[in-house]
Image (cartoon, rainbow, N blue to C red; front, side, top):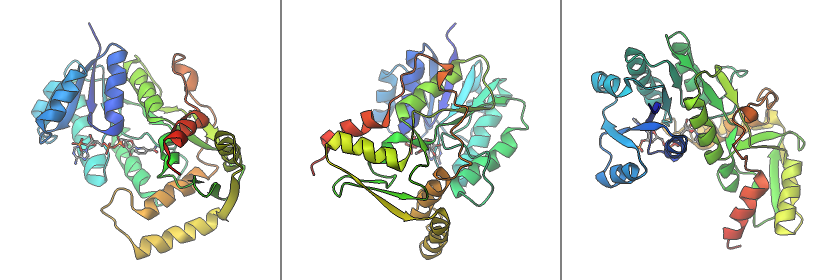
Length: 302
Ligand SMILES: NC(=O)c1ccc[n+]([C@@H]2O[C@H](COP(=O)([O-])OP(=O)(O)OC[C@H]3O[C@@H](n4cnc5c(N)ncnc54)[C@H](OP(=O)(O)O)[C@@H]3O)[C@@H](O)[C@H]2O)c1
């Protein structure tokens, strides 16, 4: 019998990729969507071969029924407390009630196990959810993938393509971990299908420093890029406090200060890039930063 995997947030950017990767791995995928999802989206997902369930996540009975016989429940939800803690708890409780043995929470971030409360609001919410998750009768596995590599093309503000500049905080030789969404989804699908996985799995498609990024961009564009240091990590911490005070936007998932907190964490030595699990599923081909950026560069009209 095909392994049944339940995916919550199946229409999300990462969630859909996880579903597609699971189908390729031969799973039977039960895709959970919010019940108000429009019929066009539902049809599109069904065409991918998914069993689609538009549901109210508060409907424990229905959720438990869907989770029955599942090998693993995977969450790819994105949001603040309401989603990361409350909705994920509902999904987790339903999975446990249905007798599911394994659960993958929506972490997909840098390894925050060495950080403390207050250093990153969004990661604090995950840590809060873990406190509940880790005492339940189910085996959880968090996937840590650093930053999505695609963010280097816009949201992760390091590359000024037009000005031919790499901006950075802290040390130009400090490596940061980047993994594409497809590689993250592929790895997650393999982990979901696995019979047993450890509490944490750490991956990185490419560990790269600002100095190396400058070289990569120079090679891609055949024009030299300059390095521009914005300040120390301490200065970034001070700036985060100021921006958060002036523009708190606390109901937004990614206000400016939140992005800066991720940057602050990425340049921290505690965001360890050692002991990676990349080789666990040897068929995965890891995309390098130069591959992604050279494709992106060709699409730019500079
Ligand atoms: N490491 C990184 O650099 C990085 C970057 C971005 C995201 N992430 C992480 O990757 C994971 C997935 O993010 P994503 O980018 O795929 O997000 P996304 O595209 O916004 O998808 C989020 C999913 O969550 C669902 N959702 C949102 N609010 C909900 C609610 N109140 N109730 C039920 N479902 C809700 C959405 O449903 P609808 O489809 O109905 O809207 C969607 O399916 C998250 O853990 C996110 O933090 C990591």
